[in-house]
Amino acid sequence: MTASASTAGGGRPSAPEDGYEPDPRRWRALWVTLVAGFMSLLDVTIVAVALPTIQRDLHATPAEVQWVVSGYALTFALALVTAGRLGDALDRRRIFLLALSGFVIFSAACGAAPDITLLVLARLCQGLAAGFMAPQNSALIQQMFRGAERGRAFGFFGATVGISSAIGPITGGTILALASGEQGWRWIFYVNVPIGLLAVLLGRRLLPRIERKGRGSVDVPGILLLGTGVLALMYPLVQADSGGLARLWWLFPVAGVLLVAFVWWQRRLVAREKQPLLDPRLFSTVRGYAVGAGVGTLYFVGFSGVWLVFALFYQHGLGYSPLKSGLAVTAFAIGSASAAVLAGRLVERFGRVLTVCGLVGVIVGLGGTALLLRLAPLDIAPWVAAPVLFIGGIGSGFVVSPNITMTLRDVPVRMAGAAGGALQTGQRLGAAVGTAALPGLFYVVLGSTHGDYRTALVTALIAALIGMAASLALAAFDWRRDRPGRRAHRKCPDEVANSPVHARHT
Image 1: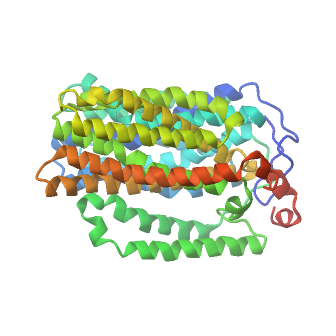
Image 2: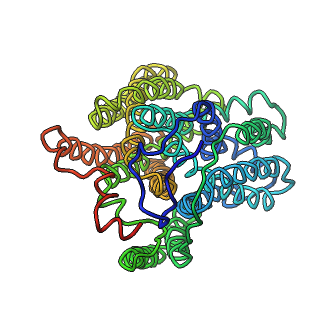
Image 3: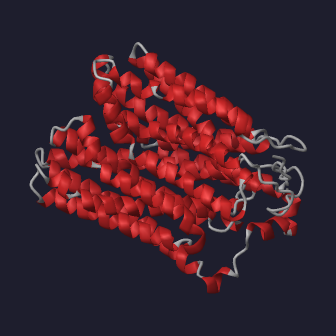
């Protein structure tokens, strides 16, 4: 497929439909990117259920084994925006295939690691490869699809994000149950290898090439400012289980200074008609982007931490196996999967109201689950709560998929990689906050109540619901602002792209 979109800074972009020729292989190519994205996001949560086994087999300390999860999340988040910008400036297809190949290699290295040090090192590299791959997924959708088809494609992409996050615990538990024995945890990593190799082969054949009229420049100072800022922000969070928040609190103001400096530098580059790492106009002129990024970040604060809290409650509080613990939350995954696919088809018609209704459903579902787990007899409580958890899953399917679609669908193709990277960085930061805060709160309440697992669970779920309520407030604000009577006063990306100010910077 040949597209007319130029690289950032490489000439004035045309209207979205100009020069666009649909590639007959675009839907098969989409499934390649979705499979790769599913693997990379699943690996954020799938390993959590295997941590006790890994710790025992490799004779690791709790702080060391925690890096198997947190190290992956850290390097994943660090790479996203830079990788997205490199894809925009250079070659999305090549970066995607190289990153996917690296992900496969480092997955095999994780599975073969003889000790905890090499396992953590391989996980850091695996997370870096995943971070380089992830923003190319959304950028390739921008490149391959237009109009209503783009909404459907983003619907599938959003469903992939939501489902992969929700089914991590049950997938990990299933693999551990099937791969019995002391070394069974290694198959959590090995399973990526054949799937990833097949995706690489199909990707080389199906992913479209794009002709470029030049190579864009890369903002190295911006990369350093953003990278060190995100590192300073996330490092205390990923170290929370070993007292990182108390020891490293001073990194938060450092992160604030670095990120403010990053914003100043990006604005300066725009004013000088240079190419920024992350164009600030994404947040000020592209319809729905700023709000969608905020909604996603706030939602993932509660959404990501909930699954660790459930695993702690079921495995430590009720003595469930990893598989049984995963099965206890399967209703949510089923509801999320079914609703996300449907939401991808409805988002063009209903817009932001889907997100609002979905957030209400998640709050009702998790709130009802907390109530039932608090009051019902423990031997039947998880199964009594399953129908209410299913409602929460349906709500989640109507949150993640439509929000990603509405956040990215109006982004100009030339900015697609950086925009997708920034969106996912916000989600990863939200997830880092949630996975640090909610289990931490769970343990605090558990200690203060002398082992009352029910009270600890309910308290953590209430904290998650507060984050989701903030996300609901922001989504409701955008819904009211974007009603038909007010929509006409908001600029679309084509108007921005054709404005004199924008033309000077492109």
